[in-house]
Length: 352
Image (cartoon, rainbow, N blue to C red; front, side, top):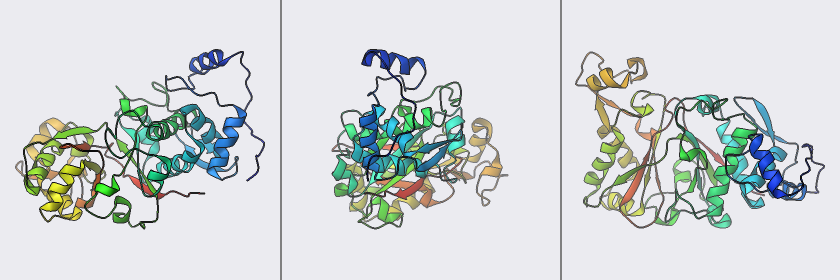
């Protein structure tokens, strides 16, 4: 695809230092230094998408502004992406704009949720996404810059500026960047995307309105059921949104490979683990009434709201507990509560 004329306004600066200061003063950044979005770099990024520069990919709230390939490319350059990351960034933004995701509420809420991006499939190895040691942390360009590019688009195109479009009371470090990959080689079950109805040959993104990962530390349990009981104990707290918005939301359990293999070695499938967590990660209704401050209309119809000893799950059905394997050696996993009002969305990545 030949280079197309770019439509964005051209700005001229004496040097890179003046450019960075100008972008910061205009609140066009996330607070970190940026890569200068020169015309040549933006053109290369557009080429990496293999789409026309003017093609509108998404309409981003709360500003409800159109995000064209060019707009996304500018922010991807600023974030430090390589051109071959563009299809992942585009797919993530498309998934986030699915009505099922509720991006307007996610962008504008006082809750500290961030738009998390889970990537699975052949593209993970192709572009060098981290799926092992420190998967939620620093040290890998693809993870760091893809998540950051999504956030910069949400700020610069969508208008999700803290205190303006973004009303988060405290925010979250996950709002800088939130992108990780499935450790498919260490997964004892079918890959996550296959469980969601895609083929092994596909690459997918799943976007979710996640809080920062909550560590699950278990160096003692040696059976599937005891390990899952510890995970359920972490899930069954009342300070996160899912405890009250039971029917509407979903959650993520990101298993470290060692915990995943302990569970699978006990003969449990992913669906068995989801069912166990659904039945075990519950709170006493009386406790929710007095402390969680949520309406019982959000709970499943089978919950006896007259019985304070009734046990209320954190999601509406077992499949709303998404289990994925990621990370390296060590007996740690993570629980990721969500905004709780909408659902995650999985989308195939259209690779050139």
